[in-house]
Image 1: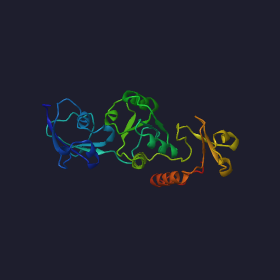
Image 2: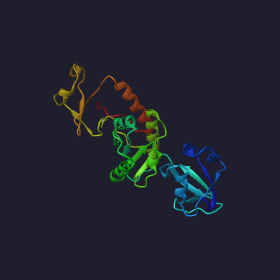
Image 3: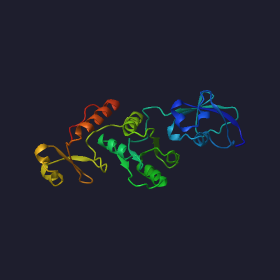
Image 4: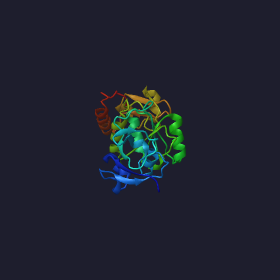
Amino acid sequence: MDGPEIIISFAPELHVFVSAPRRAAEGARVRTDGSSTLGHVVESLGVPLTEVGALTLDGLPCAVGHVPAAGERVHVSPVVRPQPLPGPARFLLDVHLGTLARRLRLLGVDAAYERLDIGDAALAAQSAREQRVMLSRDRGLLHRRELWAGAYVYSHRPEEQLTDVLERFAPPLAPWTRCTACNGELRPATLEEVRPQLRAGTERSYDTFALCTACGQAYWRGAHRDDLDGIVAEALRLVGGGDAPAVP
C-alpha cells in the first residue's frame, strides 16, 4: 500500500488475531491504500469484524465505514459481554464443533450443526437465512459478509468453548428440553412409547422418559447423568438460570 499511514492499536483480547509487531500498547504504524474503509483495514490485519465491539479515532467513536486519513490514531476494542443480538440466541456450528453443539443442546439452546463440511458459502447463507449466530474457529468464514452474526470460538477445549459462548451471549437456558442428536424439542413420554428403544433392564430402573418430537430418539436417566448434571449446574451458575427442570 502507498497511501496514508495511520497508527492502530488492538485490545489484548484481540491479540490472538494480529501479528506480534502489531500488539504494542502504543499501536503500530500501518499504511493504507487511501480508499479502503477502516473496517476493511482491521480485517486485512487479521481481526474479523464479528470480534470488534468498538472503534475509536483519536479517542472518539468511529464507524467501520470511515476511510482513515494520514496520522489518525485508531483503537480497536473487543465485543462487550454479554453481547446483544438483533434476534433470538440461535446458533449454527461448523463441522469442527460437534461436542459444543451437543452441550448447547443439552442446555436447551437452539444449536444447528453440520456434520458434513458443506463449505463456507453454504454456512454463511444458512446463517443469514435462519438468522443464526455462526460459531466457528475458521477466521475466513467469519469474514463473510452474508453472515447474520458470527463469533470466533477461542478455545480447542469443549468445556472452555461452552463457557465462552455462554459468557458472550448469555442465552436463555432450558436444560433437558432439546435432543442432543438432532436439536429437536423433547416431550415427556410413557414407558410404552419408548420401550422399543430401551436397553435390557432399563424399564425396571427408570420411570421417567422423554421423546424427541423431531427424530423420535428416546431419553432416560443413564449412567452418564452425573457428568451431564455437572455441565448443566455450571452453565446455570454462569448464566444465572436457576434450577434445571427434571426432564431425563
